[in-house]
Length: 165
Image (cartoon, rainbow, N blue to C red; front, top):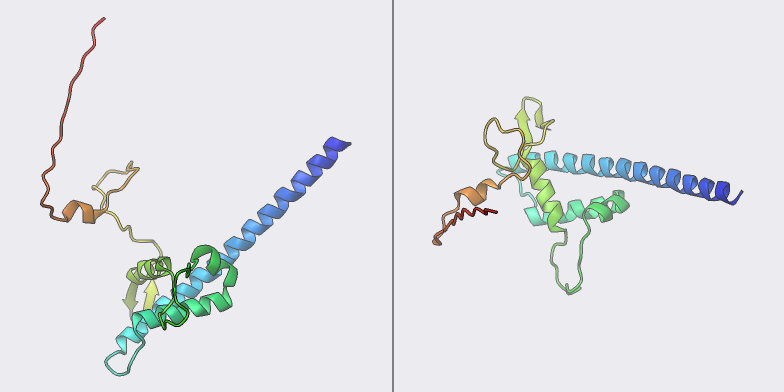
């Protein structure tokens, strides 16, 4: 009887955890759709910048982050936590996490202009350089690291050792 009770409690806990995970995934998808809408909106703003004054990038991301926190509070805190310790309350500094800026511009680069406006590409563009034809790459190398000049020389040593019994 005690074993059945234990099993039922564990099963109940697991079911609740699965429901929580599904709920979080649903919230996260809604947040990502919201960010995608803001990316397309930003493209439109940039197109109109000659005709009207548009907010700076910092202002735009800050207001977007505030909207995210209002409309998608839990998902925003989970995916884009903004650590503000050490910041003075009197500063008028725009506040949004770096991860949001990085994600925003990843999505920004994945948009294309169509006759109807801007739309996000279905497949993500890879941010890394991969040799052609190699489908078994585990650790991609950043293209930037391959092209930056350096003043340092690189030495590669090869040692062959054989052991005989």
